[in-house]
Structures are given as structure tokens and as C-alpha cells.
Image (cartoon, rainbow, N blue to C red):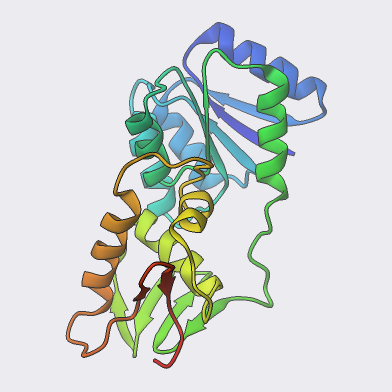
Length: 225
């Protein structure tokens, strides 16, 4: 497995690099956010491990840039910032997992393996279609009835999850786990806020909403649209 480690603390970087190398992985280390960004968009990695507090470019900005460049490489934040708002911020920036320092190396290795095992987009599946909605998974282009819609990385991730479950009700808990990686209720309105923002973009100049609310159950796309 080829891994990019963006970490400016020398001891932590050396510890993680040595451990991952001993497991047989190839590890590139960058101590500056800008250097890590250039590596991430220019090379093919299986997983990116990111410290949030990096010089040159902070971890959140770096990952947003990576996602904006169309790179969907699984990313894990490894950071001392452990508040719920910090976790939400990391996941909203496009992160797939979040591990707080100090950490157990065995857990880090297991999380990296889990991210690498997630199914990737295949050539056979390049589009998702749900009613008038279409996502080109290769270019990340989103359209509704041919009209192109510009989405932020987390809005795109939310819509992709909904469309992968088209015709089925998706609960708030499913979205928290599948889109934000939460296995608990963070007691925030992150789901509702993003659904509202996504609707405002998808439904512009349309008579019907693309994302239906099923009272007491969740959300639905692709049914009778």
C-alpha cells in the first residue's frame, strides 16, 4: 500500500513511518501542507494521513484542495484537536476518518487498512442516475435535467451517498455514519444543514424537490421523480 503522511512533528512522523514501513507499506512523508498537497494531487496514493495543524497550508485547506482537484483518495485526520466541532470540521472538509493523538499505532494501522478496503469506483460504474439527477463519478460533474450544479466536496459526498441508495429511505443515522463517519449522534444539525444547502442548489428553478423528506424516517431520492 502507498501512503502519504502529512505530519510536521518529526518524532510522530518518524514513529508512524517506521511502523507502517515495517508492515510492508510504502510511505511518503511531507512536513509542509503545500508540499503534501502537491504530492497528493500528483501521485496515486491508497490512503492519506493528515495532521490538521501543518505549516504552509493547514490540513483542512489541504484536503479541501485535494477534493476540489478531483482526488478522492481516502483521508484520515491524525490530530490533537479532539472536540466534536473539530471532528465535524475535518469530516466536512472531505475526511473519511479521524483519530485523536495520543493514539495506539495498532488502531491507526487498522483504520488505514479499513479505508484502503473501501470499494473504489470501477470503469463499469462511471455514472449514478436517480430521476433527473446524474453524477459522473469520473469528473464529479453533477447535473439535474442537464443543468450543471456546482457542489462543495461535502455536498457532493452527501448527494453521492443518497444516490447510491436511490429509491430507498436513508435515515439520519445512516448519513451520519456513511457521509461523516460518526458512529454516535454529535448533537448537531450537520445533516439537516447540508440537506438544506444541497436542496437549494438542486431545486433551483424546479417545481419539485429532488430530495424528499419522509417524515419520521429520513430522506429519499429517485422515487417518482
